[in-house]
Length: 222
Length: 233
Image (cartoon, rainbow over all chains, first blue to last red; front, side, top):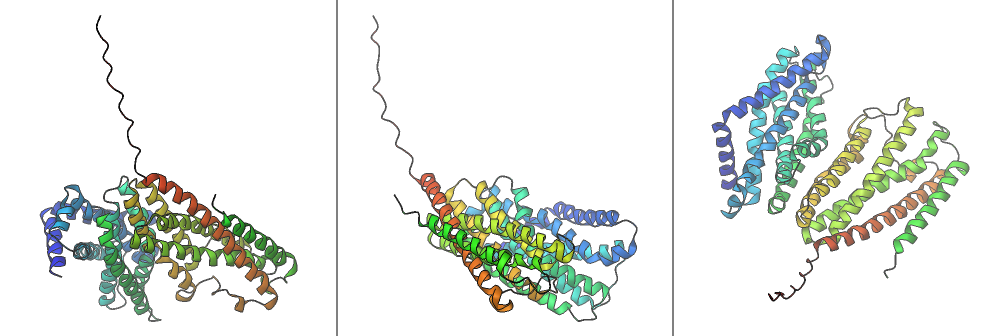
């Protein structure tokens, strides 16, 4: 547990020291949202209807920039080998890094949500807590497999292409559930479906976080 | 020379498929609602069953490869993912052919169809990953991990008709069709199973041989020739 916290602290400190990267990430998310808004055009009804989808597509595309870097910084200067030699358990490294990515994705989400409300003229029909829970669970669903795949491809050629190619099909169920839950909070949920979509997200997270935690050690040893 | 029993199994499967499709097309009654279009059942349902089963074999092989580090398991991961992918693509093609006269479109964003299409990419990536890695041991580990994670999709595909409101029919089984359709469906399922087994084992042998050559110790360098110094006149 302490190893996880140390790795988490280290990763957040690295990000804090290179704040320009975080600003670039937020700018990227902002640009994506604007592009979607421009692509749809001035049809405010369509923008409002699909606001949840734009939010999650923006988050998904931004996540590739974040996740690509998370393991590259460890492998570039041989830091991963030193971490393993300390020794820090592989599960500690994985959970530390995955939680750091989760926190950063939540920050991107917290930045993007107000933008979606402004750009798409979205409204909140259901309590805000549902949206916050959706962003948290959806970001967690991207962070765990993203961290894992980032470690798998960090030393391969063509990794910029491989990460989205591997990650996107895997997280489609997460995106489907997150978009559904977000749209329901924004447009209203007369059939009380938000809870079931969030349960589905929680189940995916349980599978990904436990499976990736178990397999991560093998991946970094390879 | 090793007995290539898989050739016999594959041919037997092919014979069963020929018989079952003949019976399905010309002997069994047309489906009550869809008419003759429903006869694709005898090809589509066995493809789906055996495709998912092949992915299950890939998953088990991936766990075995990570657990033991043996090349035989690694070869099985490659062989079964390849055949599973082939069946998966066939499944989508058959489904689209059936969807046009039934739903009016070749493709719709239905959960079952979408999750099946995702499965093609998820397992296709495993093969892409294998081509990207030169070190055999690293390839074994990383592609096995990718296979295990991709397998998370398989139960989602299976349960998609239950979880989401979908155009696709619920689970098909011999219990859900008329008695006169059960025999050709069962025989077609076994035919597809034997044919796929033949393909998987054949590919497994080929990949195994390739891996054995890849990981064998390099030949010793030739003994250097004695130095020959020409005497100066």
